[in-house]
Amino acid sequence: MTGRIGRTDRRWFARVAAARLTGADRVLPPLSTAANHGRLWLGSATALALAGGPVAGRAALRGVGALALASLTANVAAKYAVRRGRPGLDAVPLVRRLAKTPWTSSFPSGHAASAAAFATGLALESSRYGLVAAPVAAGVAFSRVYVGVHYPSDVLAGCALGVAAAAVTCYWWPPRPSPEPDGRTRVAAPALPGGEGLVVVLNSGSGSDMPGRTPARQRLEQLLPRAEILACGPGGDLDGLLDEGAALAAERGGVLGVCGGDGTVNAAARRAAAAGLALAVFPGGTLNHFAQDVGAATFEDAAGAVERGEAVRVDLARVHDGDGTVVAGFVNTFSIGLYPELVRRREKLEGRIGKWPAAAVSLLAVLRDATPLRVGIDGHDRVLWLLFAGNGRHVPDGLAPSHRPRPDDGLLDVRTVDAEAPLARTRLALSSLGGALRRSRVFTAERVERLRISGLEDVRDLAYDGEIASAPATLFLDKQRGALTVYAPPGATAG
Image (cartoon, rainbow, N blue to C red; front, side, top):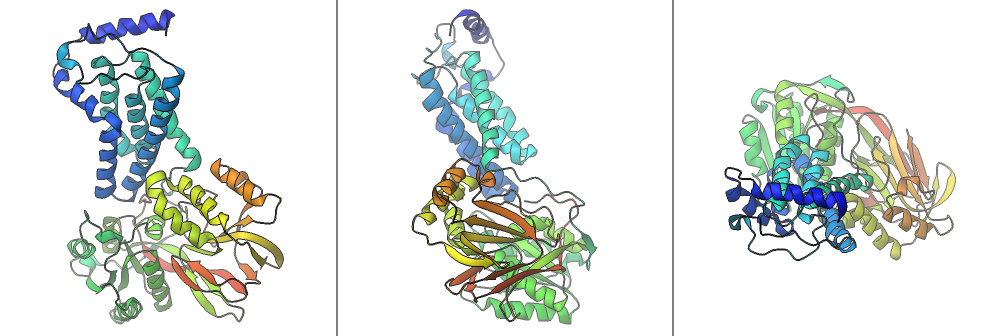
């Protein structure tokens, strides 16, 4: 770079080289080295995901995704497009210099891009984590000038690129906002000091008992020492234990609690609603969609609400066969077609590449050998790749919805992917990869109170809340509005 910018760069570089900042020589060079190849940020993301809750996990995931995008853009594209020599080191004191001087183009700073991307990614999910990371990211960015390997404009450009990369992730994977305090219907529930009268069915071996986390039973006993805990080990009779827990809670005039994944929560919710019991949900699974959506994203959230008697109303969705018999219920989602396989593959990938990219890659994989469904939707013949129905409006639109603002809106969120439109598979693939599925004509999203699905003779299975059941020839989906009372603190942030 030449001209005025180059002269300004050299002048400010010389000023930084001549500066004597107390303690900086001991801190900034090691900090700069620690950020090589993103090690500082990847280590921070790992610690955050292991030690924090759902918000921390999402923040870490977005931070890493933004970092990867920024690093790729800065180090592969921008550096080769703008071949700028590194500054001379003559004016830089020897004590500051790195053991190994970089040889690649000086513009832009890849370290600054990665630092800004990671800190901004965290801030998009949690301002608290973003504020913690920001000073460290600023230190890394400044250190690149301080140790003499970048001009100031290199660092400023890298920071701008990093912020832009984090913003781009929102196009594919919108941040999950906190629920509005008045978005959920608040109701009173029994206040149980210390958990007195609470019977918790614990599905042992769930996500909450992963290495690095305090075992779920220990956490429950610490938070609610008077609660009775019924633990179901691997291979145990979970249904029988849930029946026992519901009966004990009803007999004592108490409350049913559950700790496990969404499938376990589904089974407990149906029993609680049938017995007229309030339900306490402790997020003991891997993803814990339901607990996050009602506002009890942590054990502490749920335990505090139990002790204070704070709760919300939640709808239960039902699946009827052609005779009107209820064959299944769901608190989160229902699907037929490719969606169960799509979700299975997506969940394997999303920890590494993010939720939307994982959904797009998984969609392409399942479409490759798929056979579309020929079904009737409310009397209209349709040819579909998949049908998804959520218990309540989910946002954002698309194949990777992340949350629902209100769990008792009385609506089914129905999403379908058309297989009959010209070049449907190609259009679907292109719109998915481009992050524009919501605007694709092969994708439809609508909210209804009930839904009739017929012509399922060739459809073997239906999926609901992670469970699989045989599909009857005709299905009816509807809602029991406000059928369930679930403990959740007021104003809690969804996880």
